[in-house]
Image (cartoon, rainbow, N blue to C red; front, side, top):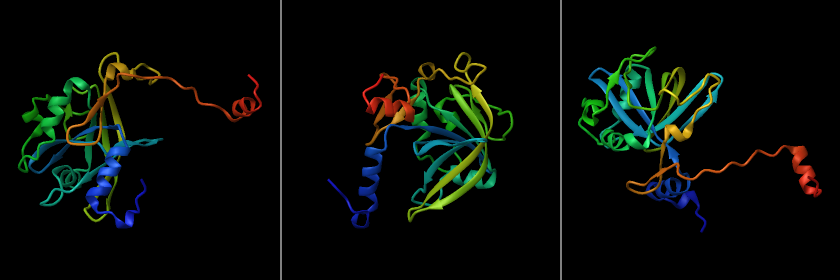
Length: 211
């Protein structure tokens, strides 16, 4: 199958992208606004830069305008991104509910809000990893639209035993979940394999049949 994007509506393009670009890590983002704290999960999420460390996530609008996450970041340009582990997935899902504006999803989901070290937005204690961020840029994309949020990491939090002094993270103990296509599709890291990267000299030797 092949598709010309110029002939596709938004719903079809969404299905194609959600179905093929997967699994996607989930950012559970906490923000602070004039009506209080907010927490919401987003699966358009990844690393943007490592010097300095930057993360990015993308937020679509609600039918009645920008989501609280976008509104809050415009008001207070700081936020905390949390990695979602399998054992907190049900509570993360509560944060995805489209509550009326101003509702504290952290409390509704039964999470514990604690003070962050360098930003005003709260941190969720139960998350295995959290990144306190300061807004670098927020771009408005597309016709719907989406808001691409880029943040510089100011402070890293890891639960005991998940990271060592050299910065190596035990992803098995983090036990993150990823987003799949469809209404409610998720994945766990239950099957992993290693494949060392091949250097150019190694590739040349392989082409010649050498070891």
